[in-house]
Image 1 (cartoon, helix red, strand yellow):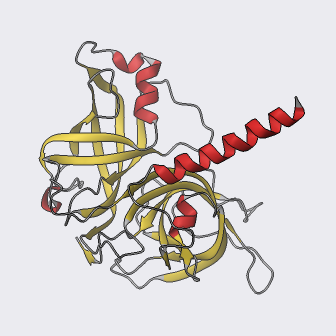
Image 2 (tube, rainbow, N blue to C red):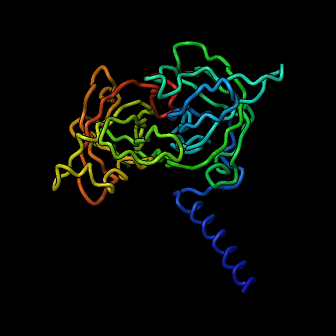
Image 3 (cartoon, rainbow, N blue to C red):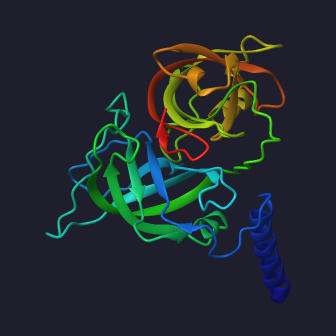
Length: 308
């Protein structure tokens, strides 16, 4: 009986690893896509900074900064990861909190904070789950910010969940989506329950990169849950299954009628209030009202180096 359990467990591990490797249309050769890979912070709701514990981990989503379309590029994936960064002590053996705008105390993110492990590492090994932790530098700024980036701290990045990972195919045969599409990520702290108050809640949105040349954009928005409706039920926001769909990380929203190009990207200046249709809910057509609060990051494809 004991041997059978071990065999079943071993087979399960192999199958799970195979599923990870087979979910992409390209092989993930071990050690492949080796390069320096940076990551954009999308901080979650926490009571930070904590003066009594400056080394308290920062919970966040991290967006691959930046992807590229080229077939031979080591960056040709759109990736968003759930994880934490723990500040480490400096040369004087003192740990200082990272000075960024922490929600919910700070209403807006405002600055573009990035995490970069200086040594190159294999993106394939990260995607396959072989890399779970990396040491790196936290910067305020990056190559695409109007101000010079500043090294704020060193820290340890713990990868908790590969939330979004999509291979970027540079084939010109791929048709762009007609209307704007975005992935959504709730700003809830890790482990926090789904709110049932039908109030206004904060989300990060990442533009879905799909067809060349496209653009890579991360914005901060709110969803008024009380505004959500369905084709067959105007009060569907009170249904817990609908709330689960709305608060599921990497949910896909289409903004019908807004052409899918960089000039029509969602920004507070041009689209302060807009309706989004939840495409990732296959059971009913859910529509919610978004308020676009700020653009955190935006660069142009196909190489995603030029600022929008």
